[in-house]
Image (cartoon, rainbow, N blue to C red; front, side):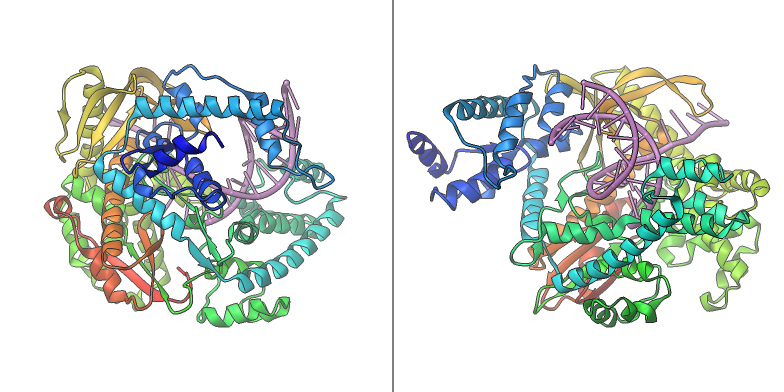
Length: 610
DNA sequence: GTACTCTGCGCC
DNA sequence: AAACGGCGCAGAGTAC
C-alpha cells in the first residue's frame, strides 16, 4: 500500500487537478478507489478530460490517434494491451487469468505509456475555455443522470421481436437454401442466379424493384424479408438491456462535442436515431400494455406489419421515472432559419417570423403559382397535389441551404418521379432556390469560402465575413488550425489546413482549402468547400442556442436527460408545454441581433415520443 | 481472436 | 460560376 500516501494526499488537495481520457480514470477512481478502498472522492470540477479537449479541437477522440494527429511519438504496446484486456475476461472455466508479477509488470508498463500519452496530450492541446468547461461539466451531469427505461416494456418487445425475426429468418433460409437475410453479397448472388441483377440490397433499391418488376413469389418474399430484417433498429432493445443500470437508467449515451460543430453525438444505444413512428399510435399506454403481454397478436390493432408496430413504439421505452414527466421541446427548422438570417435574406426571414407557411412560399416559386392565393388556402383544404407541392417546397427549403447540387437533390428527393422527369425538375428546383427564392444564400456560401481561403493563405490576418463570422490561422499543440469564430465567440477548429488541388464532382480539380478530420475512422484530408463551411457555421450556431437553453433548464431546476441536436428532453415532476416553449424561446443577444426567427414545438408526457 | 473496412440504416 | 451534409451502430467480410 505504498502508493496510498501520495495518492491520498493528492486526492485531498483541493487545488490538484486530475487528468483522465474519456472519463476512464474517473470511473476507476469512483468505483474502485472510493467504493472499494475508501479514498476520498474527487469532484467533477477537479477532473480534466483530454478527450473533451480533443473533441473541442476537432482532433481524434481516441488517445492513440490524437497523438498521431499531433505528430507525437507514440509507443504502441499491442501485447500489453492484449494482456490488460484479458485480465477482465473469464476463460472457458469461468476463471479470470492469474495475476503473476510478470503480468503486473506488463500492465504497469502499459499503463505508464497511457499516462504519458495523456500527459502529452494535456500539455499540447490544453484545457477547455471557460464556457466549454461548463458545457462539459453539464455533459457529465447529464450522462451520470441517465434516462429511465421501461424494462418490462423492453423485455416484452424483445420477446415479440425475437419471435417475429426468427420466423422471418427461418422463412428466408428455406427460400434461399440456407442464407441469412443479412448476407448481402450472398443474397445478391442468389438473386442474380434467378435472373434478377441488383446493384445493392438497400431499401430504395428493393422498393423500386418491388414496384417496377413483375417478380415470382419467392423472389418477392426474399426481397421483402430482406428489407424488414435490414431495418435493425430493434437491436436497440438488446442494447437497452445491456446498458441499463440497477436503478433502471441508461447512462453514458451522449458524447460531449461529438461533431466538428460541437453537437452531442449519440453512444451505446444511440438515443439520437430512434426511428420515427410509421404507424399511428394515438395512445402510447395502450400499445405499451399490449407489448407487455408478450403476445404477438396483441399488436394487430395497430397494423398488419407487426415489426413496423414494434419499431414505431421503440421510443416509448424511454420514460420518466415515477412522479415525473418528460418535457420535450425542439427548435423547429432551426437550420433553415439560421442560414437565411445569416445570409441577410430578410424577406424570407420575415415570412418565417410571421408564422406563414414558408414551404408553400417556396413551392409557389418552383411551380409558378399565384403565391398570395396559394398561401391563403386553409391547411385542411389542400388537395393531394397541393400537399405534394408543399412537400417539394419543404425539401427545398430544408435541403438546399448548404449548396446541395441538382444531382444530390434528385437522388435524395425525386425517387418517386418518372426517371425522365427527374433531372429537369431537380435543375429547376436548384435554380429557383438560388436565383429566385434566396439569392443571398449563395453569397453567404462563397463569402465563407473566400474568407476561409484567405485566412489560410495569409497567416496572421483575421478575415471577417459579412455575417460576422471570422476566420484566422492559429498554431496550437504544435500544428496549425484554421479557426472559425462564431457570432458568440465559440470557435470551430480545422486541423492542418492547407491549399490543395481537390476533386470537383465532375472529376476536374480545383485548388481549395483541405483540412484533416476523422472520416470512416481514418485521419485524412477533407475538403472545406463552401457547402460544408456553411453547414458548420449554421449547425454550430444551432448548437449554441441549444446549449444556452440546456443551461437555462438546469439553472431553473429542470434536469435535462437527453439532447437530440435541436431537441431537449427534461425530466421533472410538473413541466408543461408552455414552460418548455418559454425557456427555449429566450434568445442570446447575438441571435436577437441577427434576427433569427425562432419557433419552439413542445410536448410533455410519461413516455418519449415524436 | 482482433482490427479494420464496407454495406446498410436510423436520426437531425 | 461554384460539389461530397453531419453523426453512430450492427453485421458481414477480410486480413492478420
